[in-house]
Image (cartoon, rainbow, N blue to C red):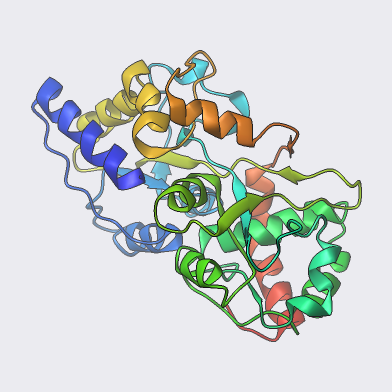
Length: 310
C-alpha cells in the first residue's frame, strides 16, 4: 500500500531528477522521535508521518517552512498555516467488524460498543503509541460533543471489554478476521485493501456519536522539510514531486489512498470504491495544532481513565 506508493514514486523521482531517496520506515511516533534524536545533527531531509506527530515535530522545532509548488491546490485544512507541513496522501479513521460474528451488522454508535456482548471481543490500538489509536481518542472526544470528561468516562467503561493495549493497529486485522475479536479500529486505506485480499470476514464501519450520524475525520500522511536538512534542495524537490499530479493520481491506484489535491480526480476502480465507501459518512474537521497542544494531557487522561499506561 503506502510502501508500494513510496517505492514507485521514489523510482520515478530518481529517474526524473537523478536524486536517490534513502527511505527509513518506523511507526508514526517512531519517525518523529528519530528525527528529534538527530536534532543536533540532522540526517533526514523530509519527515512524513501521521498527525499529530508532524505537529509535535513542528512544536519541537524540527521542521522549517517550505511552500511546495502545488500547495495552493491542496485541501486548505490539510496545510499548516505556518507552512511547515502539508498532506501528501489522504486517509480516514475507520473501524472493522467480523461479519460472521455480527451478521446483522456492526454497532451503530460508540455507546453500542459498551454492550456486554463485546466483552473481550474488542480492541483498539493505544493512543499515544499508534497513530490510528490516537485517532480513536480524537474521534471519541468529537463523538461526545468535544466533552473530554465524557470521553474519558466512556473509555473507562469500555475498558472492561477491551482486550488490552496494542502498539500496532495492523495486528488487529487478523484477529478480527479469525473472530478472536469482533471489533477493532483501523484506517480506510489499510482496512479496505486487506478486507479484499487477505481478511474476507472484515468489513469497515463508522460509529455514530451523540448526533446519530456516522462520522470520521481525515487522518492523512503529512510531509515536512526537516530543519537543518543536509540535502535541503533535494528535500524540497521530493515534496514537490509527491504533490505532483502524477503522484497524486497514483495515491488511489497504487496505495488505496486519497489525493490531497482538490483538483486531482482519479478515475481508477480503487478510487471509485473508496469514495462509495465514504458516502453518507460525515467528515468532521480537526484542528491539528490544537490536538498537538492537548496531546500530552489527553494521553495522560486516557492513561488514567483506562489504567493502561501508553
